[in-house]
Length: 610
Image (cartoon, rainbow, N blue to C red; front, side, top):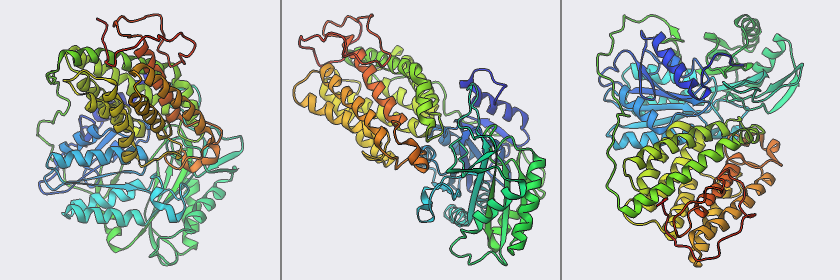
């Protein structure tokens, strides 16, 4: 377990701060992560990698000459936000464009994709590439759904070495694609990892058993087998990978491969060497020539006890790139000349900006209610954070509650600052959206940022928000989440709740109900839809590889959304037409059906306390 920490919520930030202080020879800190201490040479493509904390030396430890130009670092097991990635990429940019690289996880795909769009708006050409090397996470005919694990390293290395050679952006991307297509990984684990501040691991393995096909975010394996000897583990890893070769590799005999035996956090180096001894022998017996093997911790998962094996099948060009020199805090190969420090002033993409757009008096009044709703959201998440984590851990990585807590707390704080500066309802929601996405990271961070931004756009800063505007904003949020995440009703995600909530709200408002009553009806539909997800098998997200395990358990994202819709209804009924709050009504997400409803007509506008 992780024993040394202060505030668990600050763990990732403090770890990155200490890392940068310890490795000034190689890196300098920037908003959102780190970049090389040496400037990217003019005209060289910048390779920017990234992902969540908890995987060191991935991702910050791989920044340096010959490897990444920068790394965006998210919170624990959560992707960095689009703003963090954009900030790191801007600092690393050398004028020839940026290749953004990451493991194939839904949150990373969303945030890195959004960052590429923002960089393009900044006039910086950007491409993205997701490493998908874990053969246990999807069948060969669905390889685009595979997640990335220790195969990140050889693919990052190939692209970065190609950039050092002076290749153009699209050519560097093609190198990454070729390296990714020729990389396969497979792993086993003997115990799960425990996040900072948690009192139990994300998953457990019975005594004398091992999990097969684990995920680096603590996702349980696809099966269990008896605990093998070191030689037995080596044989399982090698034989599994040799069963699936790249399309243009017709047999292992005579092939050359980069080999990585990776420790996942608490397997000691001597144990890894015992396993590698047999790995090397088995590959040799199969006719594989090993090129510059790596044995050690390259991509970890906190204190997980486990190992993974990665094979990258080399051609002449990929071998040259794999052997090319590199000098980073955690990965060194060959020799390079002495570095020249970057003397440029760091960019500050989070510089304080106290200006907010002008807003009408009705919109500023509505902003107070918006802030109260966000406070209720944060309070509800705080109340249910452990429950959400337990639900998510059934078939996922167990961090949904923590991520929602980080996001909702940041959104509440940012909204409070904006409201205090006189912002209207739309701007308050926009600030909350950016803060939620920036702080939570992950898939839910991106999606909740989209929800709040869609609602804020609909409300605006000039007109008094009425029921029709709120309903329109929720409807657009539903459509935007489906566009961004690619999920539809039936996939066992938050969409299974968001769609019926939005549709019910829109129908109720169109039928003449005031906002409070319409929201109540929609929140009831949301609660029913969330419960119904227990009977679904996931077709999207991290739970998909463990679909059967989730049967009988509701989706964590769907459940949290239902709780939030009910909590917001509590805020709406506290502000009837006279505007006076009723402080005896809780906003902890509990149903309000046991309270008497006010049958008098309500105004459709959102009010403040006055």
